Image (cartoon, rainbow, N blue to C red; front, side, top):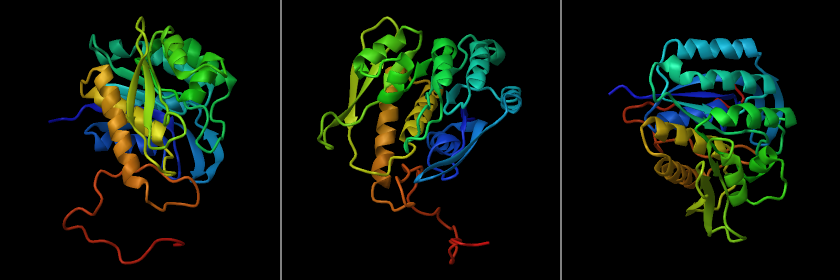
Length: 288
C-alpha cells in the first residue's frame, strides 16, 4: 500500500540527533513517507549548537510549495522555525491546508515549539514565542511543549504542567506538556499532561529510562505523534503510542557511546545490517 505522507518543517542537526534528521528517521520507522522543509541550518553536535543559519523565508516558501504542489500530506510536524516571520507565514499556510489538500479532513498539524536546545542554546526568542501563541497555536491540531517551553509560551515561569496544558488549550489546540520522571527517582513513571479544548487535563504515564542519550527526544516524540495521526489513530491513542515508541528508542540507545556530549536517542528500527549487506572494513573517521 502507498504510505501516508508526513511533512516536517524544521531545522537541521549536523550531528543527526534532532531536527529534520530525527523526524525523517522516525517517519520511516513508523511507516510513513517523509518530506521536509528546512527552516534553518545548524552546526551542531552532542556538545551543543555552534552556529545557526536561518533559511530565508522565500526559500522556505518555495520548499513548501514544491511539496504541497506534488504530494498529498496527511500530517505536518513543525520543529525549529527560527524567526517570527516564518512562524507567521507558516500559520497562514496551515490555516488553508484543508482547502489546498482538497479534503474536508485536511491534515493533522503537530507543533513542537522548539525554543531552547538540549544544550541550552536559544533557538527561538521572545518574538518567536509570541508568534507561536498569536498565530500558530490557534491553527494547529496539537502542540507538544516540554515544561520550560510551555512556561515560555504562557509567559509564566512558575506554573505547573497540568495548569499550563489547560491554559494553552484555551488557544484552540490540544496540548501535550511532556515531562520527565516524577520526583527524584529515575525509575518512577514519566507523566505527560494532555489537554483537549474544553476538557480537563488528564495525566498519561509511561516508564522512565535512565539514560544520558536523550538528545532529540522531543523531536522524536512529536514526529511519532504526526506519524500516528497520519495513520488515523485518535489523539489519545496516538499520544500513548508515541510515548511508547520514544521510550523504546531511549532504551535502545542508553548504552551507546556516540560523541563527547549528550548522546542521541536511537533512530534505528533494526540493530544490525540487512541480510546480504556487505559491511565496510575501514573507518571513515578522519577521512579527507
